[in-house]
Image (tube, rainbow, N blue to C red):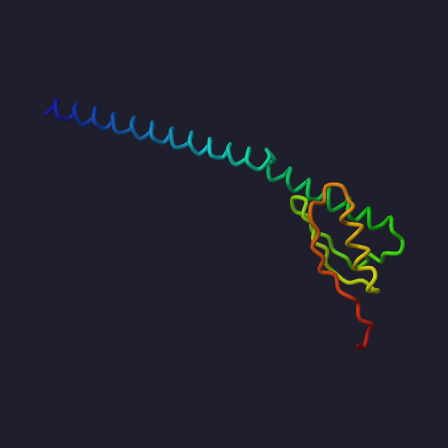
Length: 124
């Protein structure tokens, strides 16, 4: 009886050791794949990416503010990895092209998508 109990304990220890070893290897491979993902994305964490997008958005707003002929009060800017989307309304049709050109000239902007529309007067 004692031999069977001892064999059961030994078998239990062997199974536990094998599962711990397998879990450790799985964790190592998950860490390796996570490291690969960080390297593939340029080594930026989610927070750093968010900060870079926010900084680019601020640069675009600052560039628009320098152009007094642009009424940027109803313009929204979204930046993601150098791609900038402009949305909102402008009072004059000529400002749509002007805004797009100003945004294209900002350092760090790789592409511009304009969803600007012409502002309609009230009552129309």
